[in-house]
Length: 164
Image (cartoon, rainbow, N blue to C red; front, side, top):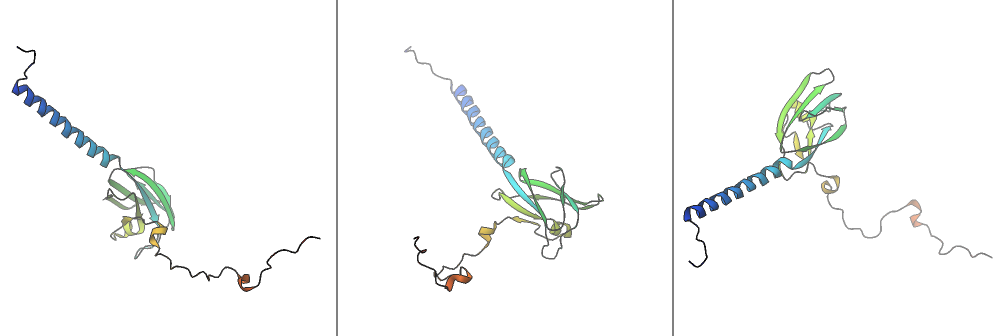
């Protein structure tokens, strides 16, 4: 013999099978960690919505956490992980006004949850949040003749008087 070991084909096939199984387990763990650990911000909004007026004095709980106390016109932020969430809306007397489950898309980092729409049963009560700078249309280019102050048309002295 020349000192080289030959591996039995059954052992080689078993090793290959174990390595492939570990690769699949790692891939599944990676996907679960990504979807389970992805964080989102939910803006809980109690402002007037289309067809649903703001509610006075409510408690909103997301995923069983401590309830947020909201009045008409209020907005608060809840940071959550995972895609699936449950929201519960109660009045200050403890009467449950609404309780729903919803899913947040992976590509949505921040969503707006409209409590008045949720309680009224209107869809969609949750939507992707668009910051103000992205929601406004682009401004028209300026010609340089913008109005700046009431004294803009008056002459301004070119230099202060010289000191004696």
